[in-house]
Image (cartoon, rainbow, N blue to C red; front, side, top):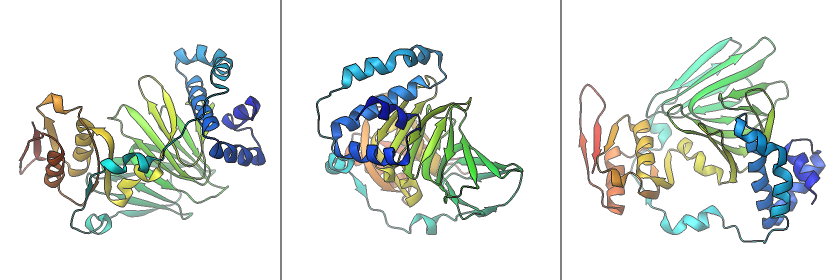
Length: 328
């Protein structure tokens, strides 16, 4: 496959027939698939607005192509095979999340701007008039607006799952500040909490085009791709990941894959509306892998973590404020 096709795929100028042929080819050739993802990350970095990427854009392709083509083929193991042996599956009694936490369902009709929020410990659903839906995760806010031409825009602080029916008359842009996603009849998940250092996007089905704040095309995502954007550096990385990991929250689960205790505690704070203080700082970077139902209590989650490591904890109940969990 020629370098010309690589470039056409990345800048979204390939024909449908070329795209079908290309993606079929890289699915069957693991070495060439790695070449594509390596250059896709390079291409994304070169299209960021950061000044330090401008020089990279000038000479990146020739250097990259000479370095990695040809490349030695190697095996890529599927995610579940890699982690199956280390999973801790927490089976908790209780109802599924839809019975445990009431959903707030609203219909968006023509309006200038509507704000939707989902409180801590809840998942809300927004239904659009064309049959599309948006799920809003815990402690999240989204602002939807629509202009006179019917073009929609969304601004998100938090996490949301978009299930948008194909509709050529509807145009939806999700503006995350650092970059924009333009929908083309898609299912995708975005995690973009203002308190976190990175933005994460996972494409489940369909296609999304990414643009920088100046509306310059950056890249096109395909199903199964996972994008991480680091806010303070502008670094963007694309990889392959099982989409069910990113969307597990919608099914009422925590999925922690090689996450530090500090990262896990931030997630638990977000859901259970508690404050967690890790007094033993050496524990903060310990990593864990587990799947836990969100219907369980924070006390039970801490018990399960304590069983896998030398962790002690104490929960202080407070009537007029959120509880505090001390980890030591």
